[in-house]
Length: 453
Image (cartoon, rainbow, N blue to C red; front, side):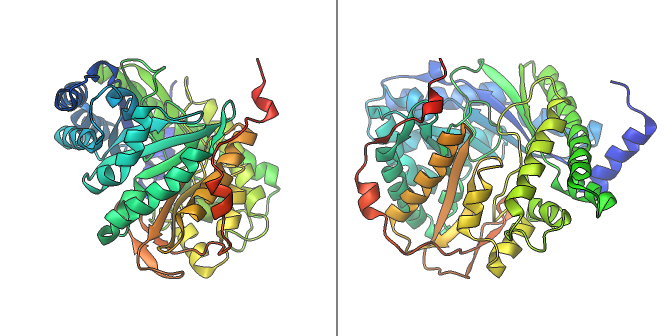
């Protein structure tokens, strides 16, 4: 596609003034051929395969960044869910496999490596159980490893035994990383309807339906959308939607260019462009501020869910026309700690956990990067996960929970994570117990809409 001089200058302005960037180039790598009954041999194979496949990922990303003048914030790796790779190993402790991932990721120079994961929406294998039990230690003893567990789907329903277990795992992870603000929990996400080609952390893993290796790109650009909306103040909402669509097209087109270039230079198949609006703690790069630019006084007030629905839909419609392959999560993220406007709204008390849950019905993913009091019971965490999974299951969409019980902190305190993870105000949870509900276990059956065959 030929670009006009005005298109080029507009893109330069987006990069220089409006926080436009490629959030991540993520290389997916299958590790199924690394399975071995001997734990040490398996870990060595994992390390060797990752290093061999991804050795040129970071240098290539830096060259593309320099030549095209497009910031690429993160270079990442995702691997086959480790519960599948290590399931045959004769060991109860899967943490050494996370250590092997961590070593390999650092050797390759990436920012994060995801895939210490299990898919347990319908039940748990021996490998799944051992992996889940190892998550707290794995995340406490590594720096860049991310973990995810899929506990439900529209086809399978919700595995409430796994939901109960994940509430306990989150508490244990928070305790083991309390000296770092519960950082381990910031690298752990619980999914319903997890996708196989997600380039964003902490939920990225390389699905079994994916090729040997693949390049997926995640774009960003809330600041660009916010800037575009300044030109349509007071206009009807259909004009707002059209403006967002056009802007999302430009953002995604840039992601497509980078994805194709990376794919060609690395000789790795191009997978998808994930066109999600991913905010950062930087002022001017906030999804919350986009919603307020539509006319809301504060994100979290009445009208927020409707505004977010408009934004999410317009982003998808504009982005899908700009790429030959859109996938991943593709929408608008609302991670509290990573969004300057969300932080402000949550700190003021306007944005609550209940409102965030309502907002996740119409946007990408779910209750993301939310700090709660450190003494929150595990059953309450599990109940929050169950609520969010139910939204995903019934609405046939991906939902997720990334909660951080802030050990020693109460409502109103701040938890610092640094970098893209930002900081989060500790938000209140309902004090009423869900212990008896969560303790029932079993499975919430799949809804009627699962019967589509």
